[in-house]
Length: 107
Length: 125
Image (cartoon, rainbow over all chains, first blue to last red; front, side, top):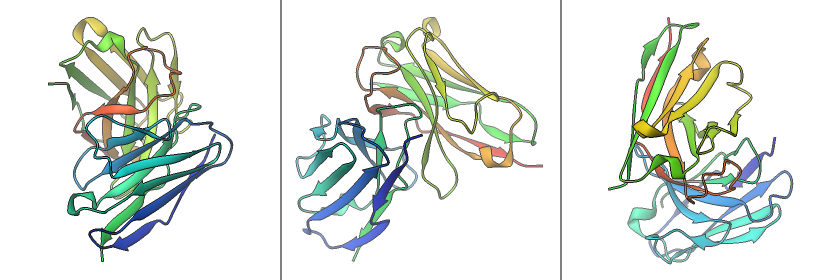
């Protein structure tokens, strides 16, 4: 199975900060990488698909980059509603594994 | 409104069975591959199983293979997960989710764009 890792596991940031989360796969997944945001008590919500494509309705402050094994999610200017846990997921091969998550909270 | 609603969760003893259902509204289920994803309390997301539009291609996580069976009834706009030989480690909130693209192909490689609210399964004696 393809394993996904994320760093950091958690971070504290302030409103307006630029935030970067990294995701790494144990083998090349080309651009089959998705990012989800999950708030407490809610279902996950897709932000980015195919490594860098912004899901419809998602604010443009979210962006994704990378290919192969290394990927990044960037929030250009953190907003109060962005405090949540972020997961990457590979959709290159079954099982469609998720990363362990990165919790973003308020500094 | 495009929506998925899960049901069928509950408290069950180890070794027993449970069947989860997911009903879709606002879209035609048979255009899409569908999946089950679970989340143990306080833990991350784990993909459990998925199926193509016509059940021609199906996949399972190793942790549930041989115990869980995914199925769908497109005429009823519904997805199911039959869970047998349940274990304590199957305790989780179970979500159904749909593929983002309408190819219906299990190996689409796409993200999950619509999720239900989840149904809780607790396995305990």
